[in-house]
Length: 411
Image (cartoon, rainbow, N blue to C red; front, side):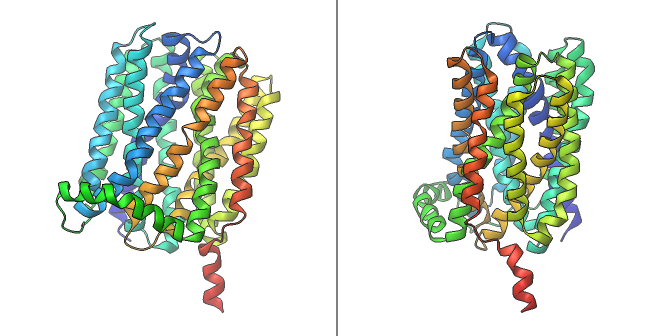
């Protein structure tokens, strides 16, 4: 295992985490819903939900194709760079937004999220290349852990700018951070070797390969079962992240600084959860970790329906953060263990397809429930608990090869 590759790979998570923390989770989403759109009747919730759904739909539809292109043409790192630059530039253009510029803001937010989510497809595909299966759980956890550390640092830096109302400088700061700390990955990670196909040939084969990839996934029973389960539960996770700050702002009357501090607490607890569960994921197997976290997430969603106190909500946020780092890292490790050798990028493309296509549903459900109930976000958030419950029921049917491996070796 090449430490330089592992560190540079993890730093890509550190780089992009400021986007997920400041833009998607804590500051820009609230600014967009409340200032650019207006959210008294839930319209801001609804349009922010559309931002998430449209951007992840594009990633979902293109990631299997581009994953195949990355494998065949050996352009994984270049595609990761293109998506990163798209996101960085779009965030930079947030400085042009004013109240009432709903559809310009919508378009820029879609492009920014497309850049972030698209880059993650190729970032995730590097995991089997840089770590053996025996260490993928902990390396995955290290990546998420460093990412949450980046989120925490970014949120701390955002507090004075947001408190002063200098959102223009905040967007520039986020774009610069994202680009700067991505550079180690682009300079140190190896390019995927590919199969010798040109980009054009790889693209044509990628189009025809989607049906083959789908058939291959369907033929792998445990992989198929896992992805169906993942489809449901990750939608719940991503939807909660997408709307939590807006919920805190609208329903519990958090001000901007309190919201940032809330997410700082979430990132720190997610950091702790990522590192604490990294080794248990390898020892116990990712399935047990994911199941435990789904129980935790279901409890968080239901508890949010009843909460009226800011201090209690902070406590719920700590619990959610612990589950956030653990479930994402364990899911990535589980997927990596189930992928047939040599098909990492295209299968992680399909993994992204399942996760992102599912994520079209959750934001629409939350936004629609909020809008039709006149802005009742409590009903919207408790509706998301169903995603965790269904995901857990389906996951119970999946065998965990990493958990079984020590038993087979011992026998």
